[in-house]
Length: 341
Ligand code: NAD
Ligand code: UD1
Image (cartoon, rainbow, N blue to C red):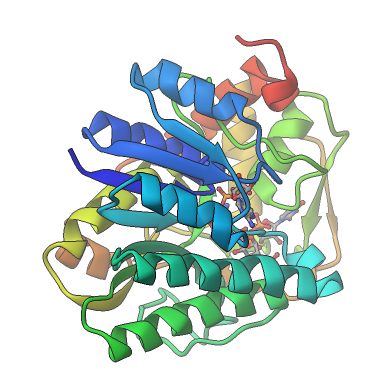
């Protein structure tokens, strides 16, 4: 049975990916420092999948701690989710992001190399396209960073490209996620931001459940069908399955390759509000305010490369995304701190 190391596996996307890995018969070892997650997520992963995983609480910047894990296990590959992801915080504290995301990845890659583990799937982001000149976005579009968070993604992508050029044993799949939303349909795991959410879907869900009073819609004068920003929302279960496709791909195509993981469909902020209100039966009060600095009008993927090369495409639409977000939020109004549903 193939063994996979999942860094940041207790987090939102990592926990959903662990379910898919266990379901496909992989052995899973999670390392996470729990800086933005709750170990309860991993208990629930085991409950949902009916299988056990191993968890080691550690910070990936600790080479000694990682070394012990690599000595104890023979990994086929690493899926590397561990990282900080709040754009605003990265602008205020860039060094924190460089240290955690860039230095942390460097330590991990160094330990991997010493143990001859050369297969990695890396969580990149559509943020590496900056403010694209046109949509849909293809993998060949120019790359740039608009903020320190985005820079960390670009630097780690570059590190992996440099490693691939230095030694052909390195095989990396860089997955550029668009906007992950939704939750596992059972409602036991989902996104649980520790602070007031920065991102749209967790914000809308918390308004719907009564934790937040109303949504500020950032900008109503964009050149889009209703004036509000358009994004490519992708169900987290589809995204998780994309990682399984990437793992299989590692064995087929050598080198370092990037893929968009998106649906190719763009929805506006008001489309999302309407869809969420419909599935939840709740009012979502909102007011249109100024644009948020750094936002673009429209961002959605051309996902055709992932379809042709990975054999992966998103299957779940807006109904499933909003229904499953609401199912998680309404069953766990305080996230993992709520009594188990
Ligand atoms: P998350 O915060 O829920 O998960 C990240 C996990 O990594 C958390 O459990 C956290 O405790 C852990 N972690 C952070 N720094 C660590 C360190 N130094 N050592 C060990 N563990 C550490 O975030 P997520 O939404 O699941 O995102 C996973 C990855 O995908 C991140 O790299 C993120 O940048 C990237 N990504 C996320 C999105 C999104 O919208 N959620 C979009 C694009 C890319
Ligand atoms: C943001 C980050 C991006 C990161 C991604 C995933 C910025 C500028 N971009 O993308 O780098 O990869 O999250 O973590 O922060 N919106 C509102 N009101 C809100 C929140 C959002 O109107 O309270 C709007 C935004 O203006 C945007 C859409 O909703 O049009 C989606 O926003 P969000 O969920 O924050 O994602 P992105 O901005 O696409």
